[in-house]
Length: 313
Ligand code: IPD
Image 1 (cartoon, rainbow, N blue to C red):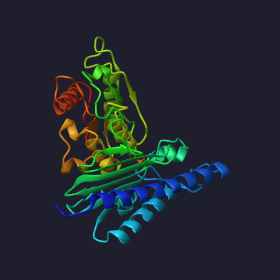
Image 2: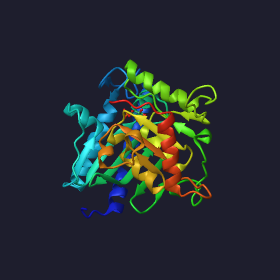
Image 3: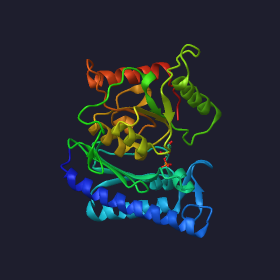
Image 4: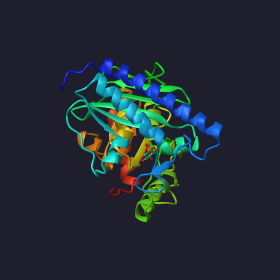
């Protein structure tokens, strides 16, 4: 593994995320003052379809972050949501080199509407394993950070919030599970997605596979969803359709908080999963007579065996 000072990377990423947050808030204010129909007073463009949004602020933030990284760490690679979209490639390419994986605004739809759940997500991977993560929600002024072996924090507070005692969770009937509508809206995909939502919520006495979980939530930002699971305020986040830049920072933050990450069909998260489109994560579980990882794997298995309808993207 290449030798990199992870604390220096994390500190630099924190500065970039805060600068990105200031740009988001400035654009938001500009809109409220101008009465413009778009968040930053500029045009909203579409990537794949009319619900896959990108603004000039997304592009300006990514340019600012990548220019700064190239000056400070000229031999590091970069992967970003907006440069990938501009490249017209269909598959994300990633090497083993030290790589910054950036979503300048995760939750662009919320940003466009002024709904306060958007953030800057900066992940850093070596050998395609996320080792530093910084997620900043500027509206709430919440900074989530982690680097390999050093723990995960929100504004300096150790995660999960119940640290050092992860809360118990016996079965998914007591779980709060985050899901997302995503931006892929074709009939087949929507049928499968809605099937999953239905089984998570339904009473199993009336619908086969129904888990009757406590509830589902959608924050509109994959990065903030990983942060919520890391903090222990949600139990599981499951989504098919997002990309490495949505999750890279979240993966290391969740892992450092004792959480466990998975790829397609609940397989443990690995280098291939990072460039895939299937993601889930579960918080640290403190069951009295069950090992943390055993409990996590059992609960995720139960989610995939009973509720999740798999689909190709
Ligand atoms: C999106 C958000 C959303 C998730 C989508 C992502 P973006 O990222 O993370 O929560 O459901 O799959 O594409 O487009 O706002 O950066």
